[in-house]
Image (cartoon, rainbow, N blue to C red; front, side, top):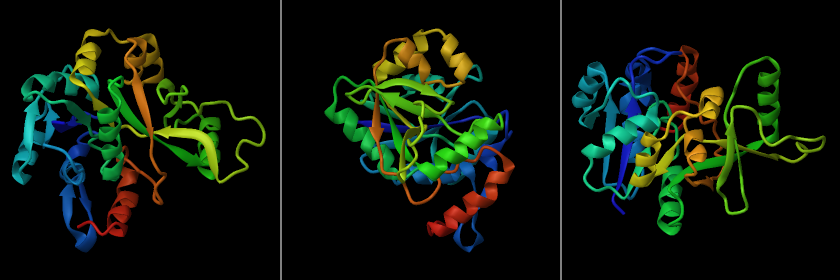
Length: 265
């Protein structure tokens, strides 16, 4: 299949303005902007015909030109990464699949994306695919503590018997009765924010109004469920390291340590 990776990037992040240009050091103290490291992570995915950054910001576009990746300029009116991918679709040459690779998720294992591509190849009914992984019980307890303190620490998902999403939430789902966390791995599946779309799915997304659930949860993928677009959830192995994203300045240190531990310059 003709598979293209798009990396949506915007400068005006609410929590961390300008974060695509924040420099991160790897092995040997080499500093590279976040957007470059995200492109390098996307290029480690096999079976992909191209990687592009899609943005509305000239500073980000100029940085991308400096390290040699194609840029698709999109409107500043795009409200999320999926809308940005939908707009960029017109600039691509007949893709079979479009991958939305989060610009702040530079530690995403390439195998996660390759699993999405395989699911979409084998399941013609799936219009969207996204990964999820089982959380360790101690990780769930930490998230429960975050919830009790009024903070949100991740997105969980539940599926039907065929592996299609029933619901995504920033709350922990499903309900966990006593004894649910007695094993090493819990029943909770953490959603990893990477997506594979067929062009039809992006076209339907762009034509669907923002739903109340999308607004309440702050989760763009809920628009697919409201529109009746099937979203396949692909189970991926829980990695040995935390999939930390760059959301706040205090995330820089742990991410740099993860880069060093992974041997990435």
